[in-house]
Length: 281
Ligand code: AMP
Ligand code: ZN
Ligand code: FE
Ligand code: FE
Image (cartoon, rainbow, N blue to C red; front, side, top):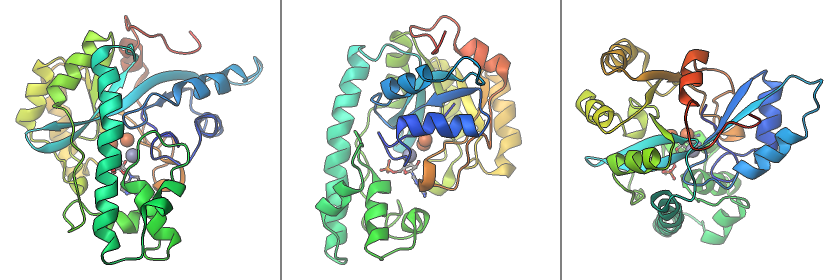
């Protein structure tokens, strides 16, 4: 229910993501690039090419919205909404600009101390509609400054480090209202991901539930194990649905497709009554 392609910061093109999901034995794949829907069509086309005697795969189109709640960076998954809704279309447009500007600022700061240039970063994002730290990480790797993406995030690109610049983003509550208004459903991604500096307190989750949140990712490798029992209880108490996902990024992250999954009953409820249908129907 939560994966990235090369249209944002994954390394698989949408059709390669579809092939990887099939190879992993997945039966329902959610494509949720950061702040772009541009991978949907290619993924659909790849699904069309699956022959009837092969195991079927169902695609759920979504997007991971970069948002902010009380100064904390919050990732919000939106599913099966009308991408032409003005709030959402405006968000996509603004975030592409905001991300590009902020990535350039990070590279500018890094270039004072390391031989890195913007052109080198762009080379690592040939299909990306939204540029991010992962692409800067890839440039740092190819320059031999760090060994891999994860090392770059642990050091030079860390949110606590001197080169970090946040992405200007809308409030989580506003994004939830766009998603609902556009006929979709909103799911909170990895709420306890402390390693990224975006662990959300329980009161915030209560507030987001009031705003119309549909579900929360519980089974995600970035939610620390010791916090899951409490989080699970909170999700139940608020009447929200419990999701699990890999947040696969291809070679960009160690996360493997299918390492966490979502119960079929939650999936059925998710796709019920939405503006967009799953593909194929
Ligand atoms: P940004 O949105 O530009 O601040 O970059 C953060 C994003 O990088 C997160 O959404 C992560 O999903 C992604 N990311 C990709 N690869 C890695 C990695 N190896 N370690 C940490 N984050 C990563
Ligand atoms: Zn990402
Ligand atoms: Fe995320
Ligand atoms: Fe993600």
